[in-house]
Length: 198
Image (cartoon, rainbow, N blue to C red; front, side, top):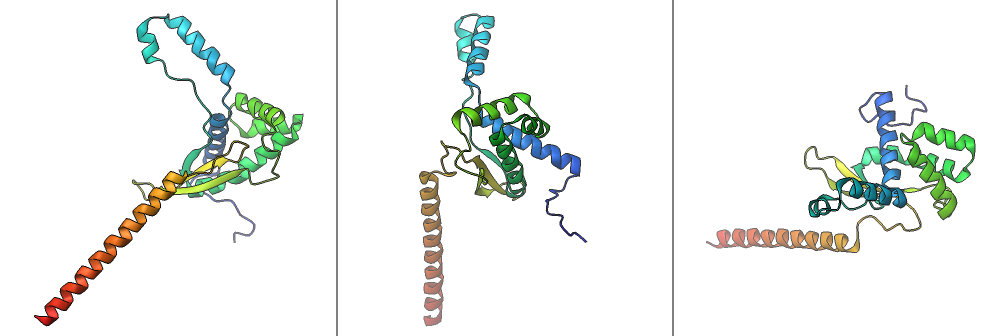
Protein backbone atom coordinates (compact mmCIF):
# COMPACT_ATOMS: atom_id res chain seq x y z
CA UNK A 1 0.00 0.00 0.00
CA UNK A 2 1.21 3.50 -0.79
CA UNK A 3 -0.08 5.39 2.24
CA UNK A 4 1.54 8.81 2.68
CA UNK A 5 3.97 8.32 -0.22
CA UNK A 6 3.43 11.64 -1.94
CA UNK A 7 6.60 12.08 -4.00
CA UNK A 8 6.69 11.28 -7.69
CA UNK A 9 9.23 8.72 -8.86
CA UNK A 10 9.97 10.12 -12.36
CA UNK A 11 11.08 6.64 -13.48
CA UNK A 12 14.35 6.87 -11.54
CA UNK A 13 15.93 5.42 -8.45
CA UNK A 14 15.79 7.51 -5.29
CA UNK A 15 19.42 8.65 -5.52
CA UNK A 16 19.12 9.52 -9.23
CA UNK A 17 15.87 11.43 -8.61
CA UNK A 18 17.37 13.34 -5.67
CA UNK A 19 20.42 14.36 -7.71
CA UNK A 20 18.28 15.31 -10.72
CA UNK A 21 16.17 17.67 -8.62
CA UNK A 22 19.22 19.10 -6.87
CA UNK A 23 20.88 19.83 -10.22
CA UNK A 24 17.70 21.39 -11.60
CA UNK A 25 17.19 23.71 -8.64
CA UNK A 26 20.89 24.66 -8.71
CA UNK A 27 20.75 25.55 -12.39
CA UNK A 28 17.54 27.56 -11.84
CA UNK A 29 19.09 29.65 -9.07
CA UNK A 30 22.47 29.82 -10.84
CA UNK A 31 20.84 31.22 -13.97
CA UNK A 32 19.02 33.89 -12.01
CA UNK A 33 21.67 34.81 -9.45
CA UNK A 34 24.44 35.85 -11.83
CA UNK A 35 27.32 37.59 -10.09
CA UNK A 36 27.95 40.54 -12.42
CA UNK A 37 31.25 41.56 -10.82
CA UNK A 38 32.68 38.06 -11.09
CA UNK A 39 31.59 37.87 -14.73
CA UNK A 40 33.28 41.22 -15.49
CA UNK A 41 36.47 40.10 -13.75
CA UNK A 42 36.43 36.84 -15.71
CA UNK A 43 35.99 38.77 -18.98
CA UNK A 44 38.87 41.14 -18.16
CA UNK A 45 41.17 38.22 -17.24
CA UNK A 46 40.27 36.49 -20.48
CA UNK A 47 40.95 39.62 -22.51
CA UNK A 48 44.28 40.16 -20.77
CA UNK A 49 45.41 36.58 -21.37
CA UNK A 50 44.44 36.65 -25.05
CA UNK A 51 45.81 40.08 -25.73
CA UNK A 52 43.93 42.87 -27.42
CA UNK A 53 44.12 41.61 -31.00
CA UNK A 54 41.12 41.76 -33.33
CA UNK A 55 40.52 38.00 -33.46
CA UNK A 56 40.02 37.74 -29.70
CA UNK A 57 37.29 40.38 -29.74
CA UNK A 58 35.31 38.49 -32.37
CA UNK A 59 35.50 35.14 -30.54
CA UNK A 60 34.59 36.52 -27.11
CA UNK A 61 31.14 35.59 -25.86
CA UNK A 62 29.01 38.21 -24.08
CA UNK A 63 28.80 38.13 -20.30
CA UNK A 64 26.04 35.98 -18.77
CA UNK A 65 22.78 37.66 -17.91
CA UNK A 66 20.00 36.76 -15.53
CA UNK A 67 17.79 33.99 -16.88
CA UNK A 68 14.68 33.48 -14.79
CA UNK A 69 13.47 30.41 -16.65
CA UNK A 70 14.11 26.70 -16.86
CA UNK A 71 12.46 24.46 -19.46
CA UNK A 72 11.62 20.92 -18.37
CA UNK A 73 8.74 18.44 -18.37
CA UNK A 74 5.59 19.12 -16.38
CA UNK A 75 6.19 16.20 -14.00
CA UNK A 76 9.73 17.34 -13.20
CA UNK A 77 8.49 20.91 -12.71
CA UNK A 78 5.85 19.73 -10.23
CA UNK A 79 8.50 17.72 -8.36
CA UNK A 80 10.79 20.79 -8.32
CA UNK A 81 8.31 23.16 -6.66
CA UNK A 82 8.63 21.89 -3.05
CA UNK A 83 12.43 21.99 -3.24
CA UNK A 84 12.44 25.61 -4.46
CA UNK A 85 10.00 26.58 -1.70
CA UNK A 86 12.20 24.90 0.91
CA UNK A 87 15.31 26.73 -0.31
CA UNK A 88 13.54 30.09 -0.45
CA UNK A 89 12.30 29.69 3.13
CA UNK A 90 15.79 28.69 4.30
CA UNK A 91 17.26 31.76 2.58
CA UNK A 92 14.64 34.01 4.17
CA UNK A 93 15.62 32.69 7.62
CA UNK A 94 19.25 33.43 6.82
CA UNK A 95 20.81 31.84 9.92
CA UNK A 96 23.70 29.38 10.07
CA UNK A 97 21.67 26.13 10.30
CA UNK A 98 19.58 27.25 7.31
CA UNK A 99 22.77 27.98 5.36
CA UNK A 100 24.10 24.49 6.09
CA UNK A 101 20.85 22.85 5.06
CA UNK A 102 20.87 24.84 1.80
CA UNK A 103 24.46 23.68 1.20
CA UNK A 104 23.14 20.12 1.47
CA UNK A 105 20.58 20.76 -1.27
CA UNK A 106 22.34 22.96 -3.82
CA UNK A 107 25.36 21.50 -5.61
CA UNK A 108 27.37 24.74 -5.90
CA UNK A 109 28.54 26.67 -2.85
CA UNK A 110 28.74 29.91 -4.83
CA UNK A 111 25.02 29.68 -5.64
CA UNK A 112 24.18 29.28 -1.94
CA UNK A 113 26.26 32.34 -1.08
CA UNK A 114 24.64 34.44 -3.79
CA UNK A 115 21.14 33.24 -2.84
CA UNK A 116 21.54 34.23 0.80
CA UNK A 117 23.12 37.59 -0.16
CA UNK A 118 20.37 38.43 -2.67
CA UNK A 119 17.60 37.56 -0.22
CA UNK A 120 19.23 39.75 2.43
CA UNK A 121 20.10 42.71 0.18
CA UNK A 122 17.27 42.79 -2.36
CA UNK A 123 14.52 41.23 -0.19
CA UNK A 124 14.10 38.70 -2.98
CA UNK A 125 11.19 36.67 -1.57
CA UNK A 126 9.91 39.18 0.99
CA UNK A 127 6.36 39.47 -0.36
CA UNK A 128 5.62 35.72 -0.20
CA UNK A 129 5.59 32.90 2.32
CA UNK A 130 5.28 30.10 -0.24
CA UNK A 131 4.69 29.57 -3.95
CA UNK A 132 8.04 30.95 -5.11
CA UNK A 133 7.93 29.07 -8.42
CA UNK A 134 5.47 29.40 -11.27
CA UNK A 135 4.97 26.98 -14.12
CA UNK A 136 3.61 27.61 -17.59
CA UNK A 137 3.00 24.86 -20.14
CA UNK A 138 4.76 25.64 -23.40
CA UNK A 139 3.85 22.76 -25.68
CA UNK A 140 4.83 19.22 -26.54
CA UNK A 141 8.35 17.90 -27.13
CA UNK A 142 8.81 16.45 -30.61
CA UNK A 143 10.80 13.35 -29.73
CA UNK A 144 8.56 11.69 -27.16
CA UNK A 145 5.47 13.94 -26.99
CA UNK A 146 6.20 14.89 -23.37
CA UNK A 147 4.33 17.98 -22.18
CA UNK A 148 6.93 20.70 -21.57
CA UNK A 149 6.79 23.52 -19.05
CA UNK A 150 8.80 26.64 -18.32
CA UNK A 151 9.35 27.29 -14.62
CA UNK A 152 10.29 30.70 -13.26
CA UNK A 153 11.07 32.15 -9.87
CA UNK A 154 8.53 34.72 -8.72
CA UNK A 155 10.81 37.65 -7.92
CA UNK A 156 10.33 41.44 -7.90
CA UNK A 157 11.36 41.61 -11.58
CA UNK A 158 9.23 38.60 -12.56
CA UNK A 159 7.58 38.64 -15.99
CA UNK A 160 4.88 36.08 -16.74
CA UNK A 161 5.98 33.08 -18.81
CA UNK A 162 4.82 33.49 -22.41
CA UNK A 163 4.63 37.08 -23.60
CA UNK A 164 1.54 38.74 -25.05
CA UNK A 165 2.95 38.20 -28.54
CA UNK A 166 3.21 34.44 -27.96
CA UNK A 167 -0.35 34.24 -26.67
CA UNK A 168 -1.79 36.34 -29.50
CA UNK A 169 0.12 34.28 -32.08
CA UNK A 170 -1.28 31.07 -30.61
CA UNK A 171 -4.79 32.56 -30.70
CA UNK A 172 -4.40 33.52 -34.37
CA UNK A 173 -3.09 30.02 -35.20
CA UNK A 174 -6.03 28.43 -33.41
CA UNK A 175 -8.53 30.65 -35.26
CA UNK A 176 -6.88 29.83 -38.59
CA UNK A 177 -7.11 26.07 -37.90
CA UNK A 178 -10.77 26.35 -36.87
CA UNK A 179 -11.61 28.36 -40.00
CA UNK A 180 -9.83 25.82 -42.23
CA UNK A 181 -11.73 22.99 -40.53
CA UNK A 182 -15.07 24.76 -41.03
CA UNK A 183 -14.24 25.44 -44.68
CA UNK A 184 -13.38 21.76 -45.27
CA UNK A 185 -16.64 20.72 -43.56
CA UNK A 186 -18.67 23.09 -45.76
CA UNK A 187 -16.92 21.78 -48.90
CA UNK A 188 -17.70 18.20 -47.89
CA UNK A 189 -21.33 19.06 -47.21
CA UNK A 190 -21.57 20.91 -50.55
CA UNK A 191 -20.06 17.87 -52.29
CA UNK A 192 -22.56 15.53 -50.61
CA UNK A 193 -25.50 17.76 -51.62
CA UNK A 194 -24.26 17.91 -55.24
CA UNK A 195 -23.87 14.12 -55.39
CA UNK A 196 -27.42 13.60 -54.07
CA UNK A 197 -28.86 15.97 -56.69
CA UNK A 198 -26.90 14.39 -59.54
